[in-house]
Image (cartoon, rainbow, N blue to C red; front, side):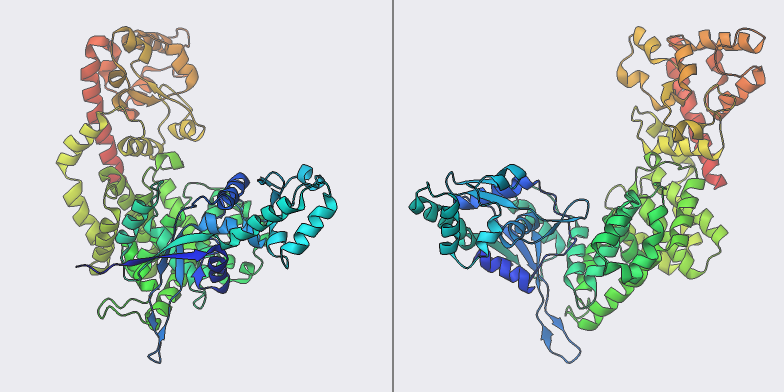
Length: 597
């Protein structure tokens, strides 16, 4: 019979809030900003007033850690589900400030009408209306009911004092309503905690392993965990919105004095959005590059001081983990490291975030970069190795399924042999002739424009500085950067007229990056029609399609776009053979592009 790994308890709301205030239950300060609308806070108070249940909150016990002197230090509980509800109660009942989505500290004031027994978010009209208690926290934290009733009746003498006293008493009793807690044992693994969470949470919201790791980090004040947690969170916000820097300076002046802030302050002027890591991405890179482990559950264990051999929890291991995480986080945020890595990805042809669908591939590429930097590999060699690994990962969809297991395997291989040797081994296994001759071609038989394979093809065109389809001056890079459209070589309307279905005419093999005005000029014409007019254009005829005016320019443009010369005679009957031939040429282009990296 298996031992029960959790306990279910009931606490008065006032008691639970006291646990939070005293630090027995840790709510990481920036675990998640308070994202509830103020109306949801109002509705929560209304539910409690009426005696409705508000759901369980879930805590996870930090393990007891063995100190250097042999004694045990009892771990705190971490609130892993219910933060929004508890934060709402702290704001409304205790009158505390909350940090909103913009990371501003704000007050949420909930008003109560003792006559109608209704709650509302405080507003100017309520402040002018004597029938409302404009801020229930003032009543909740007063000396008692008598003073509150007397003050209200002085302003509203016409009301029935007994009814008012009863309703204000019911308001105060909210603090004594119970909240259910599910306290999970410290020795549960992340997978089990996640499963419990899903089964209990009616909305089925899945917490990621990164959420658990971030909670563990932030709960350890002794080892400066809150600042480490903030550093990761703040850096990711700055990457998306550099203007967040002003909010940071105004609202967290203590953090400004940390090494973390000094390392990330350059982000206030950074406009490049090619790599905007989420906290999950950043945490994965920071951990894996430093510890050569790919599973986030290992990080959670190490943060708790887990000795994998003895299975005990030791203070010295936790302290070492926090020290190394700090060092790795600073390395991640270093301007020279971050910008040079982004430059490598951009120079490989991936010039917009839209071309990078796999955040995991990007994350592991940064891991490779940081580890090679630590090993002292020359920057020129690093650029080649990182770009090839990244493109290989995207092409083969290496981190598409079971990414943590693959991260763990790859990073351990990096420790066992020179990375250049490992890369060659992977290329020989994954990028064989059959991959290029069959695998890539098969993946191009698709209508999905977000296909990683098609993104690599576009990157190869950027890298080759190719011109747009039938363009003399406008490059593929220009069209991508300025959000140009992808058009059809065999026009969509032409294929529709010939009764082809959407999946037939929307084919990767039929797509090109083309200036809109050229696409409009082509209209619904068959390729053999508009290419005949293009030939006439090169022989002194009317300029209909861009600025190309020589036959050789046409041939050169077709070659860069992997379009066979049979296009000059192509009509509806040759569409399928055209797609087959072009897919082969596209695959060959990507193969040559990869070898050029």
